[in-house]
Length: 319
Figure 1 (cartoon, one colour):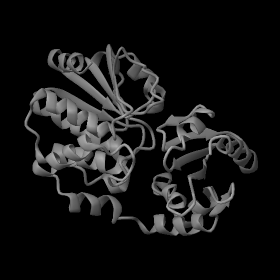
Figure 2: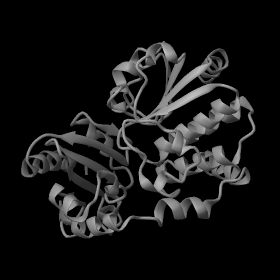
Figure 3: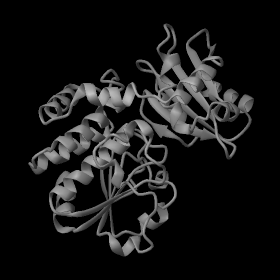
Figure 4: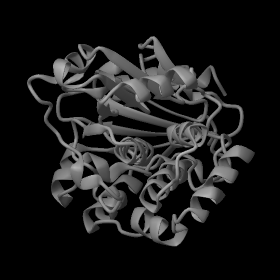
C-alpha cells in the first residue's frame, strides 16, 4: 500500500490534508509533517480541520496555515486528499461530505477501529501513532527531513505514546524518535510547549474534575466527570480536558479509567484508558466508538446516571 500512496503523491499536483474533530497532537503533528513533505516536493497542499488548533500545539511549525473552511470547489480543486489519524471519514466532522467527493482519498491511521473507508488505506494498529506511519512514508521516499518536519513528527509520536510509556511504544518507535532528534527535533522545547504551557482555565477545571473522582468495581475502575457548568465557571473549552482521563489510571489498583464530559448538545463524550490487557476499545465499540486496546472514546446519549450505568455494565464484563 505504501508504494501505491507514493505513486499518488508522484502523479498528483494538489492535495487536501485533514484529520478528526477535537484535535490532538498526533492529528496536528501528522498533518503538518505531511504538509511539509508535500510542499518540499513541489506540490500544492492545504490543511483543513473543523476545529481550531489547541493552544498547546500552535507552536508547531506550519500551524498557521491550517484553515477551518473548505473551498466551494473542493472536489475539483484537489487531486487527492489525505485523511490522517481518523478512523472514519465522518470523524472529520463538518466538511466530510465535500471531502468524500474528491477523486482520490488516502486513509493513513493506526486505530484498530478504522473502517477502511478508502481503497487506499494504510492502517497499522500495531503502530504507536499516525506520526510513526508518516515517518515510515517519508523514510520510504528517501526525502531529506527538515527540522520543521522532524518537530511535527516528534510531537505526534510523543503525545500518542503518552511520553513513550504506552504499550504501543516499540523498538521502531524509539528509533524513529531518535532519528527525528538527529534531524533537529528538540525534545525539551517540544515537551515544554505541549505539557508545561497550560492555560490557568485548564488547571481550574482540573481542580473541579478531581472533586468528582470516584471509584467502582472494588477500586479497579476510576472516573471523573466534567460538567458544562464547571467549564463555563472557569472559562474553559473542551480541549482543556485533554489528559484528564489519564489521572485515575495512574492510581494504584485502577485498571480502567474514564472521563465523562458533558457536551453542549446533550450526549456525554466518554474517554477510556486501561492498563495491561484490559481492552477498552471493546467498551467504546459497544457504543459505536473506537480507538485502541488501552485508549478509546465514544459518545453516549442520556443523563449521567443512565450513561454511567450502561458503561459500568460493559466494563464489568471486561475486567
